[in-house]
Image 1 (cartoon, rainbow, N blue to C red):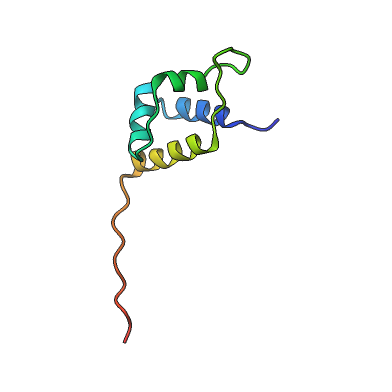
Image 2 (image 1 turned 180 degrees about the vertical axis):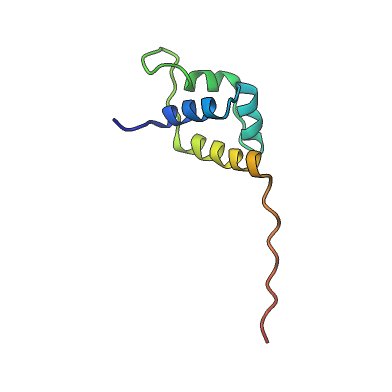
Length: 84
């Protein structure tokens, strides 16, 4: 059985000991706004009436934010000088 995006989010939350507030802040690092109620819907069981499927865009933005959270922002790229 394959893992869903919801399963991946749950496993990352447990592995990094993240709370809903932490996830909201991590998403904000990449200018992605998410509410606590949206997170609650994503972390519910699949049969629950308020369950929401975690989309690819949500997971992608969270992962990008997690990279920034763990490593820090990327340094600016240096401009290459034209060769003579």
